[in-house]
Image 1: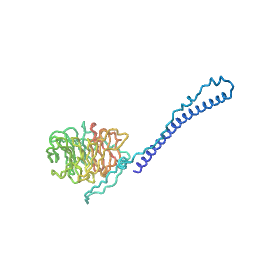
Image 2 (image 1 turned 60 degrees about the vertical axis):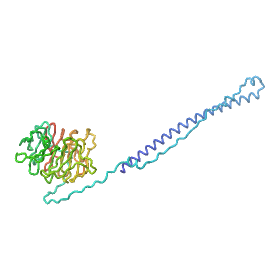
Image 3 (image 1 turned 180 degrees about the vertical axis):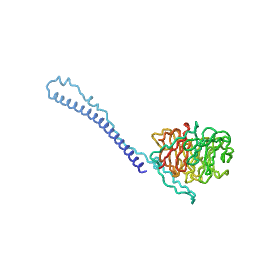
Image 4 (image 1 turned 30 degrees about the vertical axis):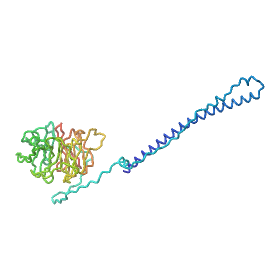
Length: 401
């Protein structure tokens, strides 16, 4: 605020100096006009003096002819120069509207507070603080064979599940070898995939509105959604499922929490009754942070929307100003790590945004030759896996020290 105040003072000084310059220019113009008028009067005075001297010579002269020939110039001298009316410049101050000035000066965002359930877990490991690398490093590239690769989910430190715009879901080891291929029950492409704490594969099937779980190679319908289509899902730290979905008329979007097949919570509106998420069928990737915040990407709105575990809006992130990122921020994939960092892909600008848990921008990952990054995930040791949509590659990236 102090910097803004200093800037305003500088701008006001500039305005005052500009007006003073205008006044000086007006003074010069007025002086020139008055000088010209004075010169005309002095010229007439000089002529009058010459005429008087001539008359005195005639008076003293004995020659009659000079008197007869003399012509009076009284009428000529009676025509004085036009009178100059000079109006001095006047400064007319405008009234100061304090309320308008207040709104023009800036805006103070209100204090945002949120209460979180404080749960002591005896089995929770102590997390060491890890800083971001100065330069993220590309570890390996896995070629999946998909022409359009959408999602990746970490099974363990050695294996990942991948899915694209086909009906098969592929499992690769970290060396890039295909370990297993699984086809969806409907034989249609899955909207998204996830892995639960038991290592079971889960996927959303938008064609029949179901969330499915694969156990021992067998597919079970876990959730069936009438009038809603599931898009993306994630597994929380407590084993719940968070599912983003849109209504069949594509006018509403929401997040629903499930415990098994039982619906526990719906997140759709803020405290003012306004929709938290844009109503459409675009992908809305979702993840849970370590502080139990629920993070959703809203591609259409160009925002990352974060609510606490009670569904209360905490903040929105709409991109970071950059001289090199010229296209609008349109987030797609999202994940979190052990440091509560939030990582989200910006496909159009071929980069990843890293935020802290409060929505503050920390840095980009844009140096690993990323092209059209889409879905992403982080394993238990904070290795990042990123899908390249059109290349069909998964890139493993190290970004923490």
